[in-house]
Length: 130
Image (cartoon, rainbow, N blue to C red):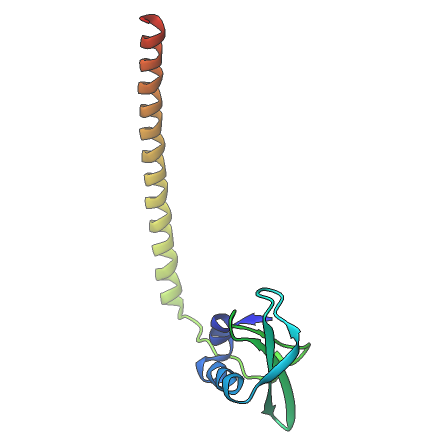
């Protein structure tokens, strides 16, 4: 099972768009129901490399079901590897981000401690001078 949005990243927009077009134009009601929303799934066929693959889709939940090995029949989106310089720049940005985040967390903790001290002092005054 895969969500349409995830499939777009994995297979590319054009492949997923063709799935959706087939699902809306050429699908039939499947015997099974979507385990999420309980509406009937729709079945449609994709012809890929002399192979016919039947997929089930829930158009309401945007979920597609693949049997074992079916997803492997489709080409994956190729991702380019980052250059060493870009990886180094990203690592430095992450270090800076982590440092800023730690400073903000420390500042928030100190502010919380100050508020806690103030509340404790007020409670002591109330208890001492009823």
